[in-house]
Each structure stands twice: as C-alpha cells, then as structure tokens.
Length: 425
Image (cartoon, rainbow, N blue to C red; front, side, top):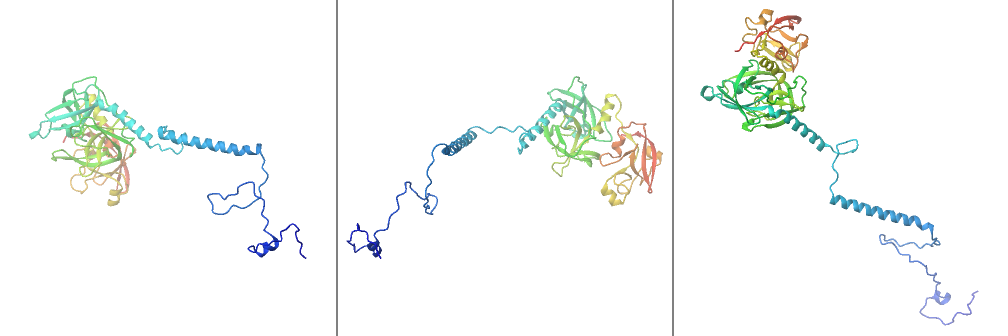
C-alpha cells in the first residue's frame, strides 16, 4: 500500500528519474556552520565529522601561550643569528674543563711561542759572532758563533771556528767589537774557549744535558750564513749520537761521540752557538750538520763542555783525563753482529782489528787492559747509549783513580785505573 502525500503535486516532470517522480527529490542535509576544506598539503579529502560544541574562555589559553612562546623563540633565534653575523664569536679561554669539546690547538701554539720568545730573550744577549782570519792561504777565514758564559769575557765556541786563526774579532749582540784570544782548545771534543777583555757582559744561563729526553723543545741560536741572531726551533731528535766531522776545508776529521741530535736548523755560521731548552738554558754547543740530509744537526752536550769552562775560570790549562785505549761503543746492532754478551759498553780495539788497542805507556797498559776487553761500568755506573766511556770519565780530573768493571773471557773483574792527561796530538 502506498501512502500519498495530499500536499504533493500530482504534476510529473517527465525529465526526472523514476525515483524522483515517484518519491520526490532526495532530502538534502542541513548546511554545516563551518567550512570543511582539505588542508593545502594533502590530496586526501577532509572527512566530514560532526563538530563538538565550542567552549570559550580558559580552554583557549594554552594554545595562545604556545603561540606566544613559539613566536618569542623564533624571534630570539633570529636575533642570535643576526648578532653572530655582525659580531665575531668570543675567543677560546684555553680552559678545557669550562669549554668541553673546544679545540685548544691555538692555545697550545701560543704557549709554545711564548716559551720560545722568553727563552730566546734570556740567551740572545750573550750570543756572539766570531770572525776568524789567517792560516795558510787564508784557510782559517770564516765566521762562527759562540756564547758568553762568564761576565768577564769568557766565551765557548767550536774548535774548528778558531783553529789556525791568527786573528779573531768578537762581535757582541749590542754591536760592540773586541779582539779575541784563544785561551785553549779541547783535544777530546770540538770545543774551544775564547777570552775578550771586557767586564759586565750578559751571560747565557747554563743548563744540564744529562736529563734530556727525545721530543723536548730545542732552540738553536747563532749567525748562519752571516745572518746574526738567527733563531731556529725543533726538538731533541736523539741522544748519544756518534759522527765523524770534518773541517770546512775537508783537510781533517775527528770522531765525535755522545752528541745531541736535533732537527732545529743548523747551518754554516751556527757552529759554536748555543742549543737552548724551553727554560732558556744552554743544553748544547752546536757543532755540525749532516750535509747529506735535511733536519739532522748535532750539538755537543753542555755537560761535556762544563769541565773545560771551569778550568778556564780557574786559570788552569785545558786538559782532559785519559785511560789510553781505542774502543768501539757497543750498541744492540754491534752486539748482535759480533755475538757480544752485552748490548752496551766499550769494546777495546779498533773496528777492523788492526792497529793498537792500548797505547804504550798509558794508564790502561799499566792497569793490564787488553784488546777484546769490554768495559761495562765505571765506579758502579753502567755504560749506556747516552753515557759512554768518555762521557763517564769527563767529570774526573787527571790523577783520579777510577774502578772499571771489565768482561774478559766470560768472566767479570774490577780494574783500578789512575787517569792520565790526554795528549795534545
């Protein structure tokens, strides 16, 4: 049964569908009070949902607060960005604890530079230029360096700087010039003492070379190639080095033992100048550079120079104690090569086995030492890489008696030797 709407018009629109003609148009939902549009950042249509009734008042405050805070933060960050563009960032303080993660390389470099500057300031006033002239056909002509170790005009330099010179001119750091006189030459090392007639001179602080460690700062000061007061820096590259050094004319050479190796640049003219530590103390006397390699220079340890420095101040002739043997310093390589029972010591005899091992009439001959003996200690102090036979003898005076620990035929014995004077030739 069909229920008819009495108010419905009976006129039919033939263009309407059957359902519309029969039941009338589809009822339309009431219009929503709000516009439900899909957001611009998605292609999905917005769902049609019923909107809960609005509540006004306190509930809207959190949203307002969040908006205010977000705006403030955005403005603050923008201000910081602008200020960083206008003003440079604050410099590092060097305090790692207060600045975690900070790179302090710059601070370290500044501290190292300050140490070098202070050290150079202490020593440079005492560094001198020595101009030598004379010799056969001008063979002694040349320029070297030196340093004042006593205010009354006592100067240490290299023997090869002053050897055979008939005239010396010493130029001080302040420009004053004095004639120099060779007080004495060390026959064991490449060292010499020069005296000038002056008083109240600046003095270089003298340090200790026995405590040196590879890697510590080394500063060379001198007058290389005529450039006065030149400073070069590096490190102590090695200790106990042994080289054969020749003079500028290549007419003679000598064996130098127990040297300090450094990569601080040492060039012609640096000879006789000081090698200085970070405290501004002289730890060596620059003596040679390896012509076949860069960054390889050598200095005589200041402890080796101290005895003759003191002898000059005491008015004594420069002499060195001597036992009278040829010897080879033993190191692990030599020990392995010759199957020796120890890795350090002094093997009496020449490398090729020819020639004399013990000088006739020497203290060693009187004590019964012979070729093939190995000296391993002096007065209970073991020989080592940085303390060879000559180094341990140096602190003693001529006439002192020392006790040598000697290995012979796989047995050990103690031998007393009274030190003599090293011959001049």
